[in-house]
Length: 43
Image (cartoon, rainbow, N blue to C red; front, side, top):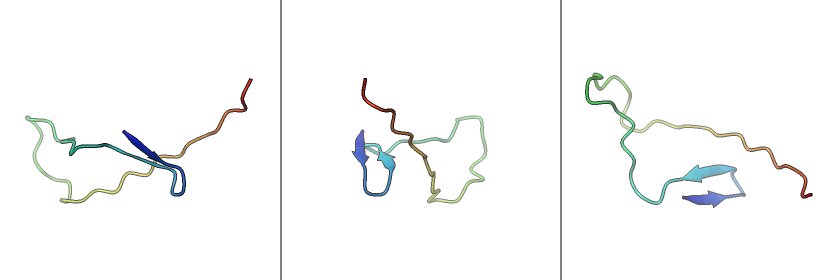
């Protein structure tokens, strides 16, 4: 996994299939997933 701090997103190093085998392909080809990150103070 590669963490890009500038845009606060985590991008997998390789393609990841999020579809389940028993689930119909209802989602669009490119789905944007936004992940919010919280920085904890160093102890």
